[in-house]
Length: 133
Image (cartoon, rainbow, N blue to C red; front, side, top):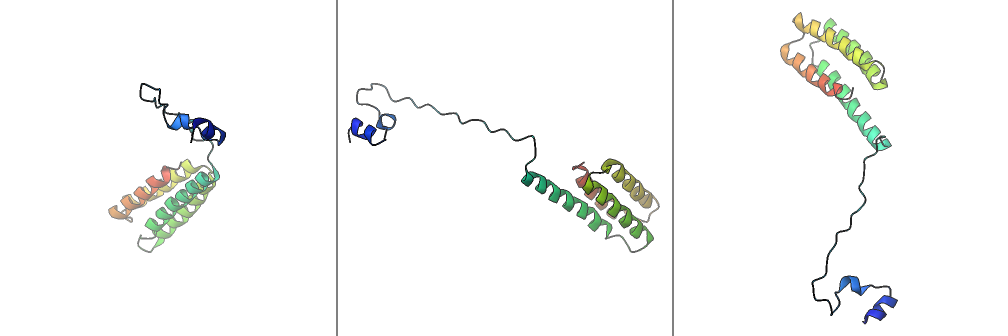
């Protein structure tokens, strides 16, 4: 296929095959693709993934609380947490609500009602929630 025939057919062989008269090897230049910048505004997928992760973190705290021995303290902490989780999920005064919950948890731990292992488990789950605040 000659160069003119290739050009007529839409192929540009000059870009593929160096000419016979070229004395040096052909130059290869890299084309720069436009840089992709992440959007500052979360997309619906990012938003729903973040929401799902937050809900999972909130559920982890509740699951950790459910391992406490049955009794008044467990019921109170679960009730406080359910209110706190609802406020966090709605984005209403989340920092204050989680501080209030931690104060109640710390008091129960200091009184010896919440054991050390359970306390650390709940605090670890709370740390995951805090990453979303």
